[in-house]
Each structure stands twice: as C-alpha cells, then as structure tokens.
Length: 224
Image (cartoon, rainbow, N blue to C red; front, top):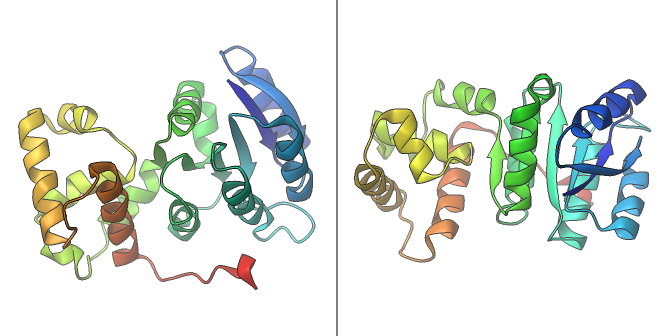
C-alpha cells in the first residue's frame, strides 16, 4: 500500500514514516504544505494520503482544502485526516464529498500504530473512518430531529456506524446477533425516512443525518 504523508511538522513526518516502515505500508513521499501534497498526488497516484488539517501558509484549514481537492480530482485515493483538534465539522466536510475512502482521526491515535494502519487499510478499501472520540462526544449531546426518533440502542448502533464499523463489529461490541443488528439498522433507516436503495448508500446517509443532527453546518469555503 502506497501512502503520502503531509504535515508541517518535520519531526512528525519523520516519525510517521519510520513507524509505517515497520508495516506493509510504503511511504512514497512526505510534504509540508497543501500545494505540495496535491502536486505529489498528481504525480505519484498513491493509494491513500495522511494529511494534517492546519498547514502553511495560514495554518487554518489548508489541509482540509487539499483533502477535498484530492477527493474531487482523485476519487480512488483514500484521504485520512489527522488533527490535534476535536471538531466533527471537518469530518462532515470530508464525508459529504463522496461515499467512502475518507477518515478523520485525532493525532493522539498515531501512538497506536495498529489503529493507524487499520484506518489506512479501511479507507483504501472504500470505508469511512471517524474517530471514536468525536462520535462519543456527539452521542452525549441531546439529539435533534430526526435523530430524536431513534431509541437509545438505535443511536448507539448509529454511533458505531459513524465510526465506520461493520455489522459484524457492531454485533461483537454490543453482544448482539447479526440478525438483531440488521433489524436495528432497518429500523434506523425507516425512522430517518431513507427509502430502500443500496444499503451502503443508506448507511452513509444515515451517518450524515446523525452528524448533521448534532453539528452546526459549515460553509465550504473551497467553492468561493
């Protein structure tokens, strides 16, 4: 698996490269700003990129802008955003661009190499990964319509769906049978008024409805 690492902190770039070198992941380039990242992706066509949200020159949201640009221009390239900041709005901006192949993790997760490597493989396989800390904070907020239609168990399952967990993993976490998990997810789709269609598509829409229900909207300034 070929990956590009983008972060303005040289020590972090070097550390990530050294850590990933002990796995099956090949770091084909490291860059320190958003423009260099997009050029590297255009040239090297990696399987995935690791990118920080705040990079030069303004250290605001250059990383997320670069990530969104990569999603538009290279839809087969997975994007995993790493951030010091717990802000679910950034995760939403990524998830809303296209189904799957995106992720948002807090940088503290980097200390657990297995978590980082698993996230990279999952987004390369077309899944979406949202940091459990973000999901935990969201689930502890008072839900708004239409999420308020869901039962406590259904919200718990939807939170795990937001993390990108499969039905099998949800069942294992909550000690539920596969059939029970499927039944709960069916109820979630129904209560959120998601008409029958491709199940993966409905999972993405359900997660977006969940995140929108507890997070203020963010204007996509990349279109300005």
